[in-house]
Image (cartoon, rainbow, N blue to C red):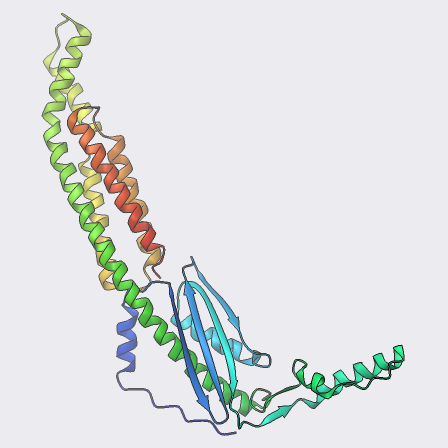
Length: 321
């Protein structure tokens, strides 16, 4: 049973692999590949959906169990996260030789004969039925047992699986590019909203101090206010409502997020962490909003828009490897 020789790797294969490794990929996709040999073929399909970790489910035909370790190794080298269903199908050519596992068939016949004697059954076993029982019949290659045959089958499976994973990567990269474009647009929206918050916060400081003085006069009536004490209280209140640090950290997180989108792969967990930090800053913006004045209400509305944009990005990040 001779198999087709593997083609030598292209000189630039390593460079291509390195370039692919830096490409943002989604965790969703489907691909399949077919590899034909003398008298048989293998078809491998790979279906991927999002998952926090790598969750690999492998289905192989009966008798192909020795291939499982190599298949799992190849998948782990190529995929970092996601739920993957990998299915291996054996396809026998019409002219392929058929092999019968005589030991398995003999065991079935012995069991049938024992039952016939025990219950006094006179009917002879049906040969066609015996041949359809699991493990009795298959192609000569499917029932391969020698190290050489298993190695040949493993090589075919590895070549077919690599092709399927290449196709899967191309699909995941296309979706990753679309996700990157959408998230970049939302990051720009967050930056614009934050800039508007900064302008409003700066404008609100003197107005807030004036309103604080008026409010204190209303409460104290004719009692004279110490200008120094008033300035001190205004400064304390202004500090409590100052959002400059939150805006600075938010801008830093947005910048880091954009860098990860354009310069790396396998960044889903890092992106999710940055989103948590961004959401924390947005929550603080809301909590620090100074009162019910016009500027304060507008800052609150903008902060809520920022939170909404962050949540929409989070939905997309859940599908990034």
